Amino acid sequence: MILEIRQLSKSFGSVRAADQIDLAVAAGEAVGIIGPNGAGKSTLFNLITGDLKPDAGSIRLKGADITAAPPHLRCHAGIGRSYQIPHPFENLTVFENCLVGAVYGRNKRERDVVDACAAILERTHLMLRANDRAGTLTLLERKRLEMARALATAPELLLLDEIAGGLTEGECAELVDTIRAIHAAGTTIVWIEHVVHALTQVVQRLVVLNFGKKIAEGEPQAVMRSAEVREIYTGIAA
Image (cartoon, rainbow, N blue to C red; front, side, top):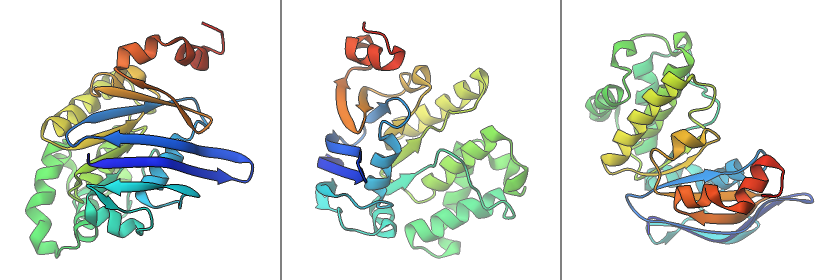
């Protein structure tokens, strides 16, 4: 397993944002995580990346315990992440944004990662904007740059946080094609998303969170047919 989470818990006062979560992800797998707002999805990612410290439980990456490791060491160990709201360095070019991810995420010199950054911009369809300031990008391009900057760290495990949110149907389809290609090339993906039809085009397994608890897990279509999952999303007993 590339990622193993055991009994992971995190509370904010009386709010239990992660409640004894168990999750295992195999190398090369694509796993989707869904749940209503406030279910604890982003909290789970923040715990995996080290932005938050758990109250209890453990996180292992490729067999090594990283529960207490700082974020930059988790990144060097192979975890890359995109954020729900893209925040590029707006006054830097697209290429320079990618370069920042590669230099600091891989702990490398600039001259050693230039070719890798160019290849990533090709994969994410941003090469034509390479020399443009990131502040001039459209929302779709910002989402692509968010993913490119994460890929620049050379992750074995890529965490995508609602990367399809706010896009048109056509833009979403374009992004799904890119994510599918990244996964096909061997990158393990864990993807949080509200746009479930986009998610199910890529992932082999769905995990459902609600009030910090994992309440369902399995093949995507079977999970979406679950009475408990349908009730969570509609508020009506199925």
